[in-house]
Each structure stands twice: as C-alpha cells, then as structure tokens.
Length: 465
Image 1 (cartoon, rainbow, N blue to C red):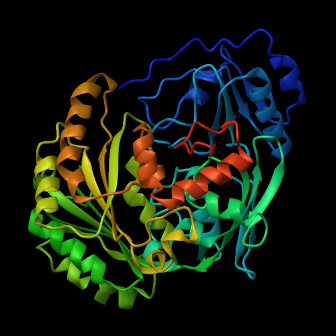
Image 2: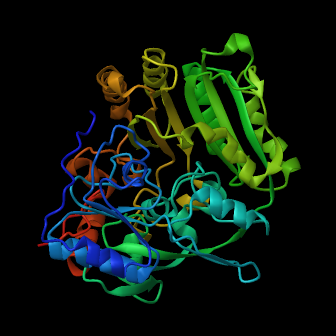
C-alpha cells in the first residue's frame, strides 16, 4: 500500500533557524529545492514528508539532532542508504538524521583494518578496498548504505568464506538516545556490541564502523542461467550446500531479463539465474562450480575470472529506486513442496520483474554460535526472499495481492526472519527475527540505552519494563 504523505509543517516552537546555524552539515526544510529529492527513499511506495532533514557532518551534528527531536517531541528517523524495505529512513512530520555526508574512510592495509563512516555505500567501500586486494563481506548490491547493512547482519557474496558483515566488525562508535558518544567492542560495552551485531538501529546512531579486512583479489564469478523447474532449483541448492566454503551462491527464480547475455528467444522465460562468487584461485573455482553447471543445459553461462567488485554488475538493476514488495524467511533445505510452491508462484507473477531469491549461507557464517550475536540464525542454511520490484505504483494492489498469495504458499516451508529483510510486518514478525532469549536480552539492553524508545523507527525492540 502506498504511504500517504502528511503535513510536514513543524511546530512554531521549534527554532529550526537557530538549530541550522549551529550545524556543520546542512538543514533541508520543506520548500527547499533539495527537499523533494532528499525526502525520497529507495522504496518508492514510501511517500513521507519530514519536518526537517538534517544532513549531519559529524558526531556533534548527530548529538544536536537527537536533542532537537527529543526536546520538540518529534519522531526521529535515521537514514544511511535509504534501502529499508519498510521506509524507516524517513518519517511524516518528524526529523530525519541523514548520514550521507559522513563519508570518511581510513584503510590500514598492513593491519587489515578499515574505519568507515555510515554515509558510504557497500559499493564505495568495496571499490576502495579492492585497490589493495582487500574486502569486507558486505551485501550483494552497491547502493546499500553501510549502516543498515551492517547492523542487520549483512549476507552477501562472501558469506560462506568470510561470514556475515558483523563477523568482521571490530567496533562501533555510537550516539545513544541521551546524546552520549560511546564505543562498543569485544571488551568495552560488550552488551551493546552484542546487540548492534544484528539488532539494527534500536540502540543509537552508529557514526563509525571498524572492520577487519580479508584478502580478496581476483575471484571466479558471474552466473549460469538454466530453465526453471522444481528439479533444477533443488539441484542448484543441493550443489551449493555441498560446495566448499569459497563458493557462495545466490539463486534467483525469475523471468529472463533482456540482458546482453540472454539469447533473444529466452527473454521472458522462467529461469533460474545461479549467481556465484568463488573467493579463491579461479582455477579451483572451475571445479567448484562444475556441479552447478551440470544441473541442466545452460541458456547462458557468464562465469569467468574477474575482480571482486565486478560481481556487483549482476545486481545493478536493484540499485534503481522503485515500488517494492518483499517477504522472507529461513529454510534448511528446498524439498519438493517448497520447490513446487516457488516455481508455481513465479509462473503466476503479474509482471516480469518478480523473483524468488535463495541465498545459500552456512560455511563460515554457520560456524558462529547462534547466541554469539543478535543475529540468531547461524544454524539455518538458506535465506529465501520473494521480491517484487514492480514499475508502477498505481498497480500496487494487484502486485501486492500476488506477493501475498505467493508468500502464503511458500511460508509454511520456512521459519524465522532476518530483520533487515522485513517490511512493515508487525511486532510478531520482529519477534520471529529475534527468537526466544534473543529478544529478551535485546529488550533489556534497549531499556538501558534507550528506555524511552527514541529509536523506534526500525524493526523495533521494545524496552524491557
């Protein structure tokens, strides 16, 4: 459903002029030439009008903005890259902390560390690190901001070899609800460091990430495209689960797009696009991908040696904003029923851009205990998402109806949820993302750092009472 915009006019008691004069960054208000483009987020169904957008330049600006929102009694949204499916990076009539100007990056190649601010995107950090043949395991799309990606866990092209993004996170600097600036790592504020690794933006505004770096230069990457069938999907997933840790696979059931590598006669056919990264010597990668290539006669095969950042070209269409409907869950395997539900659902899709995406996890990410971080699904092998990035917001009712129907058929085969893969789905689904004792522990940490739930525009953890 399209979110209706509200009147963004702030209370006359708020001295925005005085506030703006103290900023090192930029204050964007309704009526400004910058307001319309900067109020928009990646999901074009979200149409909200903040009272002010504060493009903060440093930590002091963040502290001032939190104080402004609290003293004025206005809701506070925090935006890194703006990719939140639920549109949590904006708010009607409230204040947006826009981190896009905080883009400092310091790389210590010898010490294998990088310190990055949250205004950087995954693509920008990946490109900068690649100059020294280093990498952080981030996501699969260049335009996603470091903030939401990291705090949600981070599942991407290197997940089986080097784990989740949070598995390479060494420390954070964070501004809490009362304006305190704190550091959290394995020895300082350990409870907070546990919580931010998967617990999202519930505990404050992270202004600095320190990552441990990994040697990643040339990889074997690309995709093989095969005709879609339940048997083919099961075969791909089975081969990917049996693959060495160096090989990460993301399989998408979708209608073949008009890409240069797709034969003209195959465009529009239902296919499985098997995207791969082998993070090791490309020659060894040839053997590792052979079982995937053997699942079915390929329609297209563009797997080749490449520089690691080149793999992001496969997901370039996902960087464009537009209407988006999304559901997700975890599975341990794809059995006959799940495979049939996925294939049948995509055959009935009302447009050519819908897809079901299966991320094969395990490997390094699966060898971390479930309770070591707030990301509590280390023992789950597959992350399944039904994604519908359609083109026309006026068609929302039909597109959402298909998504719910497809999701209803698939959901019984899975359980749980990844918080950063949730839309606006209610408190029950948030609790699915943080099962059992995980939610209770997060709620207690939330009580200590944000008892008034100032940071509630997220997949919200309610403070323990």
